[in-house]
Image (cartoon, rainbow, N blue to C red; front, side, top):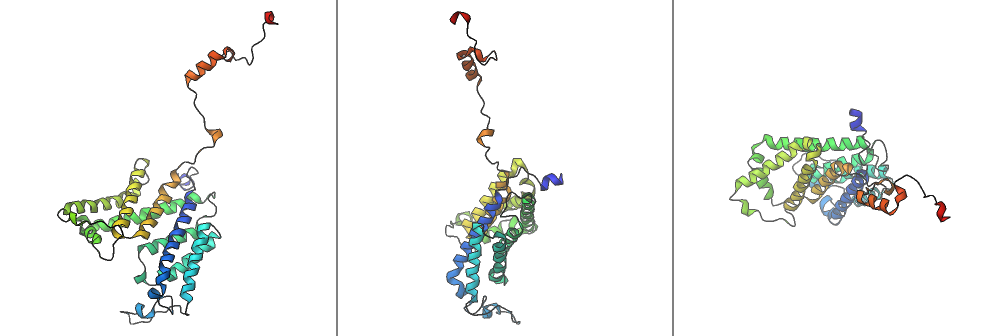
Length: 306
């Protein structure tokens, strides 16, 4: 049973190039978005601004310095994204991208959030997964690692929410919808929900049940599509209402790669497609050719017609 779970040959390996190209394009857009404001955020003389990082800290922080070296790191970051998206030297491109992502986005907690940590996990997978060879027999074990990782993320996220009262009464969701720093370009006004706190509480419970039930319902064939569609809708809502576009796109990519694409059946070749012939058509063909019913290939000539 374990061998069948790990090496199921019926799963479609097309999720590997989608996962690789998706994470590469997403990080490429992140790097291009950072390029115009790189010096303002990190400082012109280092990858990270010394004075900004030492605010509220009494100890110095060792930072790589060297004039425009930070811009060169960002340029190398973009080049690695392009190589990974094109499938050129995928393992080395993913490794370089993973290291530079650590320097640029995760060197200090003030500059990183959930998207950066999950992107690091995705790049780690790109280093070790057979991204350049979807036909590898290790494709299914790698898929299981990604699937179990997602189950752990959602389960403990839901468990953390249900342990406190703020998600159960809707307070956490209401605060998140009104944080001034989390505003999307298409964010609708939710002030009409203020007289109806029970609606916000129901939405909070909906998020909790989606996340806690994810490890079970995403594996069952009867509920997989419902749960997957609900999770994708939840992340689309996060993008619209909170403006976390990169995070939402990354989580949708994770879910589509892990639980949608592997279970899609590739189309059969034309020679393997059996087209059923209706009985009426068979009867008509026999009526038109009486010799077809007696198994003879050709009618013998009669002596009187010779």
